[in-house]
Length: 198
Length: 240
Picture 1 (cartoon, rainbow over the protein chains, first blue to last red):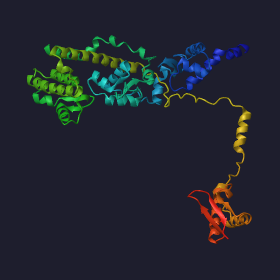
Picture 2 (spheres, rainbow over the protein chains, first blue to last red):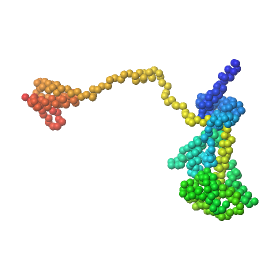
Picture 3 (tube, one colour):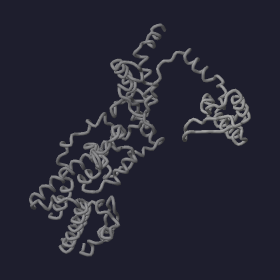
Picture 4 (cartoon, rainbow over the protein chains, first blue to last red):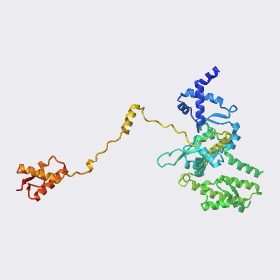
C-alpha cells in the first residue's frame, strides 16, 4: 500500500498523467515543446514522461495508441478497432481522392509552397479544381505569395502528415528514388504491341 | 474498328465519359477545358480497343492519329499560351525538353501512387480531428496591482460628481438704472468723467449696459459726450 502511494507521487508519473490529459483534449498533435510549455516543466522530463506513456499506450496493450506524427504526439485508436471506428465515423478528408487530386497533392507535398501554374506545368493539366478539392479537405492550405502580385502558393497541412502517417514531410520517399515503374504508360503500350505482333 | 468507329470510341476519363466524337465536339465548342483531359488515356484506350479488332485497321489508325495530334496541339497551345520557348528550340531540343518534363511528371505520378498506397496502409489509423486549431492562452498585459490603490481608484470613480456650474450659460444683465444712478452721482461730485476709466473694472456685459445708460442720459439731455477720434476714450460732461 505504502509502495503504491509512493509510485503515484512519483513526479514523472504525475507529469505523465498531465501529458495524458493534454493529449486527450488536443485536436492536433502536440510537440514536446507544446507539452513542456503547457505543463510548465522542462523538455527533458517531458520526453521521459512521453516515453512512459508510449510504453503504456501501444498496439496490443491499449485501445488508445500514442503515436509520433506530424511533428508531435497524438492519441489515435488501435488499428484493431479500425472496423468499429469506420462504422462510427466518416473520414471525408481522405475518402475518394482522385488520381488528379493525388498527383496534385504529391506535387504540393514535395515542392510546396508551390503555385497552381507551377503544378499545371508539371502535370500538363490545369490544377484549379484539384487544388480547390484538397483545400476543402484540409490537406493543403494557402502559404502566401512569393512577392507583390505573385500567384498564391500552397503547402501541405499537418492534417496531411497525420492522415498519411508521416512524422514529418522528411519521411516522404526521395523523389529520385521513383524510377522505372514510372514508364507505366509505355509498358502498357508495348505489351499491347507485343500481343498484336504475336 | 473502322474509321467511323474511332469517333465512337468509348472514353472513361476523369473529366469526361462518353464517345470520342462528343469529346471533340465539346472541346471545339469550348464547353470542355482541354487542360482537364488526359490525352494519354485516350491513346491507351484506343490502342487497347485496336487489339480487339483484327486485322489492323490502318484507316482507323490514320484517322485517330490526325484527331489526337490536333487535340494535342490545341492542348499545348492552351497550356502554354505565352511561352515562346518551344519555337526557339530545334526539334531535337524540343524533344529533349519534352522528355525532361515527362520524366519530372512521371516522378510525381509515382509519388502520387506512393501516397495512394500509403493511404491504404494507414486507413486503419483512426484519430480525432478538431474543428478549431489550438488557440494560445490570452496574454495578460497588466502589471500586478496594489489592492489599496485599486480601492482608491474605484472610490474616486464611485463618488457623486459635483454639480456642474451653469453660470456661463446665462447672461446676467444688470439693470440700466443702476448705471444711471451711478453716473448721476459721479456728475454731482465732478464736472465730468472719462467713460472708459469709470467702467474699466466691469465685465463686458456690464460695460455694454453702462454704455446704454450713457446713451439714455444723453437722450435726456443730462450729459454731453465727446470723443476725439473713433475708439478713443469717451469723455462725459454734465449737460446742464
